[in-house]
Image (cartoon, rainbow over all chains, first blue to last red):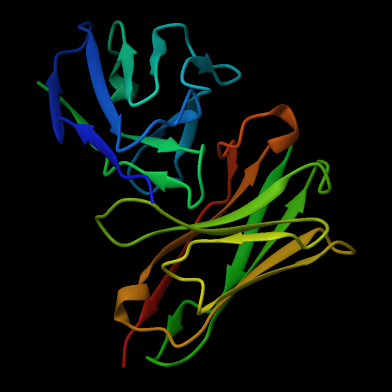
Length: 107
Length: 120
């Protein structure tokens, strides 16, 4: 199984600043990677798929990059509604696997 | 607008079988794979398995011996059964859609989640 490792575990950033999340795969997943946002008590929400394609309706301040084993999610200017937990997930191989998540908190 | 709504028993005793059903409304059923994903309290996400309208399945090997995912195309429903549950199976269970025909297998639409607790 492909192990997805996210860093850092917690990210403290001020509103208006940039947030950068990292995700590393234990072997290449090509560009078959998604990012999700999860707020307390809610289901995850798809943000990015194919490593860099924004889901329908997602603001342009969200961007994804990377391929192979190293991936990045960037939020260019944090809004209050962006503070949540973010997960990466690979869909190159079965079983589908998720990273352990990065919690984005207000600094 | 596509919606996934699921239901099932929320409290089980050890060794019982977990049973959940997810109903799909507002969109095509046959053009997608349909997945189950779970999340233990305070922890991350674990993919359980998936099925398409023809009944073709993929399962997580870590759960495969205890999991059955089935489909009822007449009702646009798909179901999860997990046998011999223990406290480690306590989690929020989600159903989710996989738009594989669009060439990406991420989970684009999710159900609301159902908390299942295993306790004696």
